[in-house]
Length: 79
Image (cartoon, helix red, strand yellow):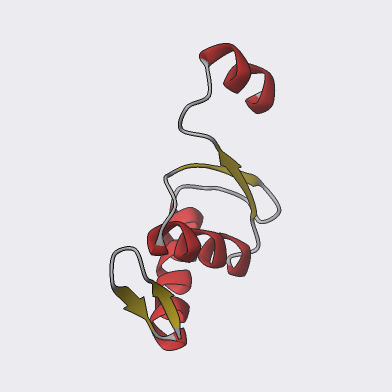
C-alpha cells in the first residue's frame, strides 16, 4: 500500500504493478532499450513514486532531476 499524505492519494501494490506494466509497454513502444537512463522531471508525490517503481520494474534506470535546475546544469547532467 502506497500513500501520499499531502494529497490523500493512495495506491495498492496491484495498482503500482499495473502502472509499471503500462509504463514498461510505453517505454518499449518508444524504443527505449532496457538499461537506458530515463530522465524524470517531477515534483514530489505519489505520481513520482509510481514513476520510480515503474521505470525500475521496466528494466530502465531512473534519473530524477530537480524542477528548479538551470539549463546549464541540466545540459551537464543529461550529456
